[in-house]
Image 1 (cartoon, rainbow, N blue to C red):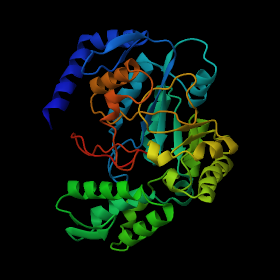
Image 2: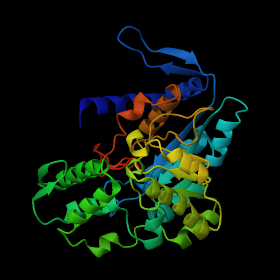
Image 3: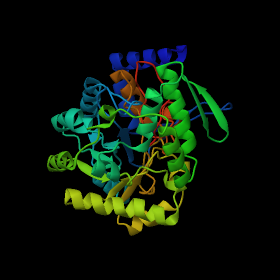
Image 4: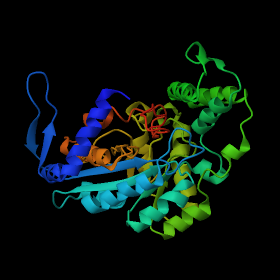
Length: 383
């Protein structure tokens, strides 16, 4: 691990243990610090509006799919306990209300999860109920309906079980990847997925099929990884909200007009039918600007969505577009001091892309937390 992360961890731990972070938390209610440049130092400015942060998680627990993401249950519980003790927690409905009809300056946090992995029922739900966290889970509806894991999970599994130590394939050009370790295989899968995100959806599916033909994926690795509708309905009764993450988790910007309409409207229709209730919120798969494109907001509005979340870093303020909600992915931090430090950075920064955390959330598929060891690794999904 390089010296800079160790230095940052030491600073975060010192601030947390000394109580200085509590002082910074109070300061962030009233002031924000704009980034400086070579000619001037960063200076504090008075906060003139509310700030709403949305946290993005994926799986809670360890072992099995998704291979690029794991977060120990005890770490997740510590983070939820910290949020309950230090911040106002709101649902996405309340967050949208605060952005549309602000009544006073406030800071609030909403908790969300992408992809609908089963550990959200077995590991996350008890903690969410214990600390009364009003969470939202975004579902790739086809994966829930069929029980099949999303396509990028199959790529990670393909690279994991590929018997050869060299992979030859054609991406933007003929490529030859050496698969000399589990870490190398993870990184190769990440690179392939990043490339596939740039392709039209039909071409992306074709390359996925070609890659998967080289192996027989172990069924035990694919089975029982997604939430079931019965579990989802039980979570609804417990107060958890569900939203759409499209039908098949494509890159929205790479869809044709008809595909876009189907992925957005059909996922909402089927989700609401299965949960027998409204699903007014949407999350873009992968979620970076190039993944979202500009064609989706009118379709989202026609389909009856109230909001759409990205994985663009930063906080949200009154007057911002509800179809471009910013979300941050700091939940993979293994120490509560660093989690608290980065959350405080988020609120001390001006609205918009938050440079303080952007460097740690770049991910290959867009939305996942790739934390398979204590060491920071590339992440595959901003989904």
